[in-house]
Image (cartoon, rainbow, N blue to C red):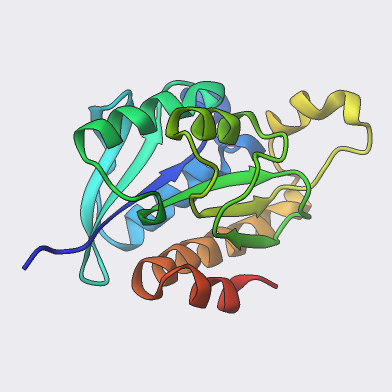
Length: 190
């Protein structure tokens, strides 16, 4: 009997200068999910850092594209050419400025909502119908500073909410693996 397989892609930018930034929250959730499930995400393949392990009797690949955010779809497409999966078996974890810090939103599919990493994935996967976990990072007061805002770090006041939400995001990903998108949405969408 074949073991079910899923892929979780955390969006972010490679490099120490991006560690801890709002735009890298997808990487942070992947790192936490890997840590609590004893999966090493260090193999360099598919223009990404890749981990391969088991969560809830499912083989799970954890992918951190190293292409920079705007080219994330290239890495995902390369992975899926070698390891074909239905789009319903993929979960993308991304930052979202439309949600306040600490808010999560699981969706079965949908538009990029102005997010360049999601735009790249949609273009390379030829569909927008793949599950995603949107992690609220807040929005700048002035839209003209949006790039600096998402490439900036969370404030000390936000940090506690962020840490708790990273933990909830990992739990939401585990629920998606174990139970599927609808039950996970019912449990984690607030």
